[in-house]
Figure 1 (cartoon, rainbow, N blue to C red):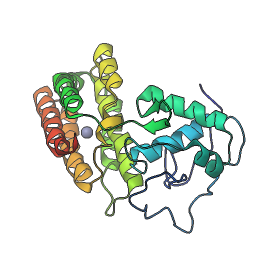
Figure 2 (cartoon, rainbow, N blue to C red):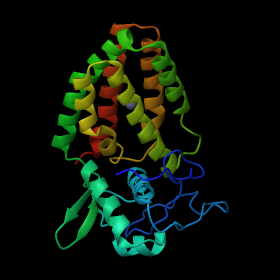
Figure 3 (spheres, rainbow, N blue to C red):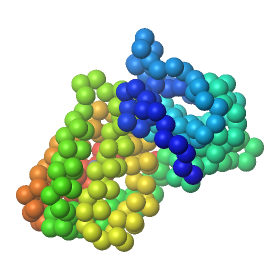
Length: 256
Ligand SMILES: [Zn+2]
């Protein structure tokens, strides 16, 4: 479902930095939502922009501006984005395919609930089986350019001094990208696909919004990327295992 490329939006590689939509629950104000130079509030074009609607809603879900298990009111989206129901429904079904949105009878579209404790444990169990091994392989098999790009990605994930929900959402996207690149670096397509199907970042970053998550992960990534750059399989494997163990410990209190 590809459409013509959309113009870049100010302040984000993948989506807007501001909440464009009024959801039923908005427990915390986004400090930059009211910035004087915030981008226009409505989508101007009237067709061919399902992906843009998709990105807006996805960014709001990932930045926890729409909490888990919350109804997404299509009527509000229609008014605030200035578009018809059709592209919104299409975007929501794309989000449904990713597992970020569910359709409930008599209620409509809702954000997916948080992971249960059991699902959370199972997710980390398989991550611990696959990702340290993928990192070990990647230390031996990634080419120089792939390694350089990985280092660059890890560097730009340095947390900003004041973290907002928008930067948190971007960190989640970058974290996903970093882990996906290492999985790809294992050069084992089956490992790469198995990890990709878990949609790990879509789930774990919705458990909690806290700067501890990004600050600690940044340091752990630095150690991991350093081991990869030195092409040390044993250290890369250990660093990935350490990062996943720590991530588990950070988030397990928030899995129900
Ligand atoms: Zn990570």
